[in-house]
Structures are given as C-alpha cells and as structure tokens.
Image (cartoon, rainbow, N blue to C red; front, side):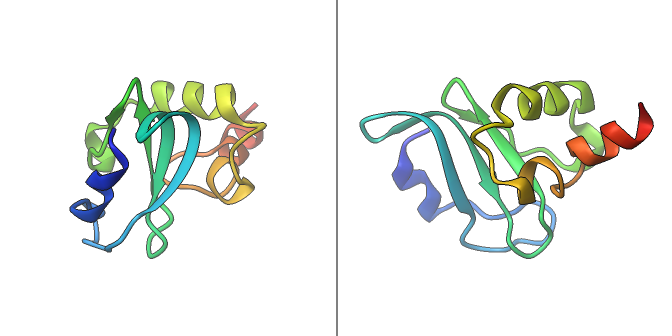
Length: 96
C-alpha cells in the first residue's frame, strides 16, 4: 500500500479519519506489511503484501487475523495485539 493512500482511507465501521499507520515491513513509500488502526473504535486492519484488508467484522476471517497478530506480535503495539478489535491475542489466551 502506498503511504499516500492514507489520505483517502477511513474506518469502514465508524468512518473515523485519519487512520493511524503502523509500519512493519516498508520498502520506500510502500508498506508491504503493517496495520491501519482506528483510534475511535480500536479496530485494526492488516496490510498484507501491500493490500489493506478493510472488511467489516462479519466478513473478516478471524483465524487469519489471529495468525497475523501472532506473526507480528513482537513489533505491534499492545493496544493492537492485546486490545484491538474485532479479535486480539488477549481473547485467544483467555480461551486456551
């Protein structure tokens, strides 16, 4: 995802603008892997292979979201990995 795309993206749930960008893997002006975070509703939207996955909760693949969080947990802020919505690692730990 090109960083300048942030200028037009808003949270699909509550329309919050702008979204916060957490860069995990960046090449120049392109975010290969990262997260878009809505400061209003605490939802995170992963960026995987340059593509932001900005689906409403009911259309998201929870297993994919959890795998993404587990893969990047050491680089992600805890407010995303353990407190983010619609899923987070805190919920997963409590279900284990």
